[in-house]
Length: 397
Image 1 (cartoon, rainbow, N blue to C red):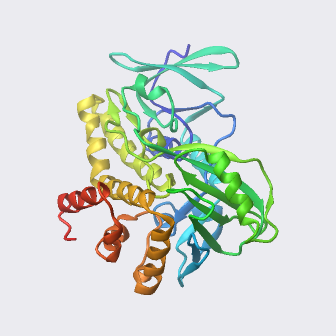
Image 2 (image 1 turned 45 degrees about the vertical axis):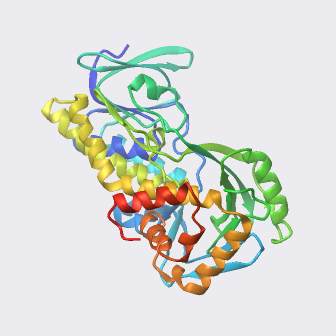
């Protein structure tokens, strides 16, 4: 057993964990990063972030596959509208290499990166947190004054850490294609996709793209039907890999801290409910958590009461955004194919889509849309929820 007590153990080397480890270590704190994988950053993800992401994290510039200036949205009837801007609206990045670079930056500040470690137990003691892991068939123990849980969605570690788990989830399915789309992102609704699902085709490098879907159930079967149908629309739709499937939380946890512990990223549902994307939210949450933890380490106060400041700060920035995103998802899931067709036609004809859209912040557009004719399509009980939220946020509908 490693008898020394470091400042922080970070469980999970994804975008949330790696960023938090980097921020803490760069402030002089001793950090150990544990991850069950042998390779950092290889989580299933499309790797799209907003253009503004680069303002917060300029190093991403080294890992951009391409910048997206336009998108085509296909309606269930096969019609499509094209959104085009003079400035890039999203960045399609090499997620794996980018996240790996953040973890390696943490090691430059003496963080210890330990891969292949499967965490089996988390136990909070009076003066430290003890973590037991399996590595190559052996048990290892690590101790720290604090712990950051960033182990991803669906982990059994949340309960051990005294954190709540997200209550709602959806599924993504994705495959890599030998197909070059130029700079355009394609979004698909209805037709070969069941109610509440949407699909995408996203360009990567000059020779490959991602094809994927997002929805509530049976992702493999639905993806296979969807991809077969697309072959009639696109030439040269050749598969490169097997289908990858993963779960995505679409509701934030009600409690993301406990004594000596904070949770960040997918493990506590810090994900956009509209698209299932989580890189930006995860890294911004890591920034907040690292600031609170650093102050707690310096003042020697890592109590649940003090760490509740992390949740308070997080909710000030993200709670409204995620609440509105959830309503947008419920609304979309309630629509028939005919209604989706009508709404897409309306969006095109009315000029609603002329409004600048942030890929990471959707609430302003959603509220704007609910103030238009689109509100007529909102059914009970979603309609009551929309009206209640608008009232609670003091937004005039």
